Amino acid sequence: MAVAILMVVAAMTIASFLAVADLIPWTTLIFIAGTVGGVVNNFRRMQKLSLAGAKDSTEMSERLVTIQIYISPFVGGVFAIILYGIFMAGLVQGSLFPSFQSVDESFKTFRGFAALSMPATNADMAKALVWAFIAGFSEGLVPNFISKITSDANREPAARDAAAETEES
Image (cartoon, rainbow, N blue to C red; front, side, top):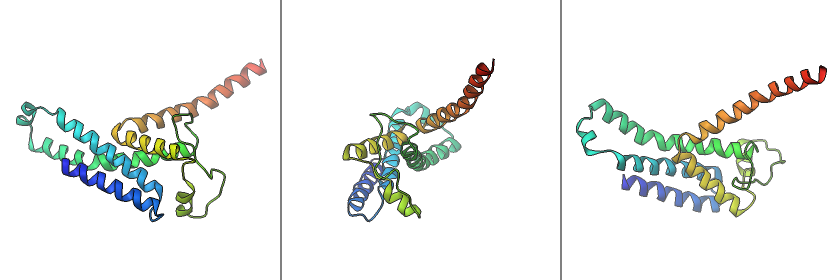
């Protein structure tokens, strides 16, 4: 597990140098920060496993744990990109969340979109990386954000309909 953590940290360091040299988009670094969060969360889980529980484990449970170890960092990276998109769309705003430059500029390709999706300041980039790590670490964060956004979107038409009925009476 320590080797996996070192490899992910090395990949993140290399990706940050490549991003500075404009060889990869910053969104790749966001993905990697999410995978690092997933790896750290896996490491934390592994520490909590008891040796007594390991004696009682079956071959199937061992396979599931192995699959979890390899899949959760990837899911963490995907969640980090989704959360980055939520921030870019302005669906969640505030001083704890990153702001973006070029929000009104149009793009023609996904590569152009990725190039225009830069945080406004260094502090905003740091916020984006921290939130990407958190998205990978806390597997429930992004699904909870999506559920809240969905419930808010469903609630808004109902509130408008109720206000229209009140005005008509």
